[in-house]
Length: 129
Image 1: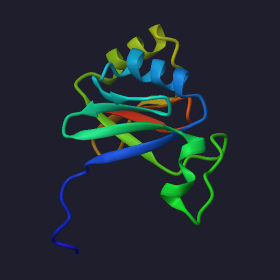
Image 2: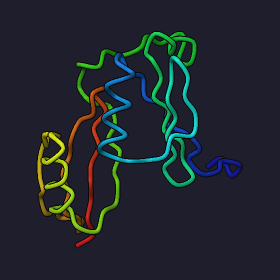
Image 3: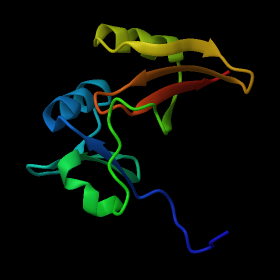
């Protein structure tokens, strides 16, 4: 273990369509925007920043690896704790967000549902049972 590691400071999501992904995050999550320019929008989620970055700007961040395609299978899932998964799912439906699965009671004591944002990132809402 590396003892000098702190908390999660930022997550950068590579997006093909910054405008539509930003609208999605504004409408679905409602997090405050702390920075924006022509190629990125940064939202604040507690102590963590969520940076939506135009995919064309991303290669230098992960070189020599290529940027994955948005249509590829998910490689990560981000979970948001909620008080009432069913109520959140109803609100997602009202906003036109389709669920990948759920709500489902999981054997590890959570009721979860998952959905995908326009950039291909899978998000999960999880209620403690």
